[in-house]
Length: 52
View 1 (spheres, one colour):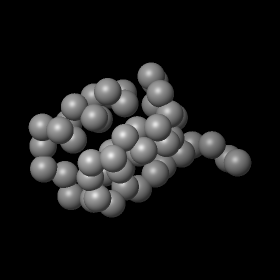
View 2: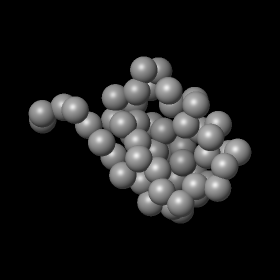
View 3: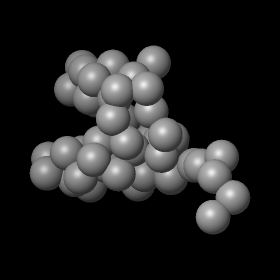
View 4: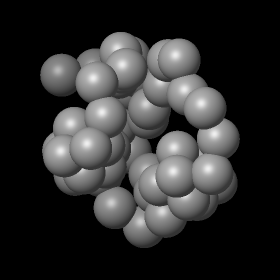
């Protein structure tokens, strides 16, 4: 999945909680989180595999 897939899912499904990876194939998770926040208030948990 990628960031656009996540945004499409959010527009087509009822979401109670999103778990979002910081490192997505097409964009970073922070950008997707900002776009989510423009329209939605459900909680978002950010994950990362980075050590820093």
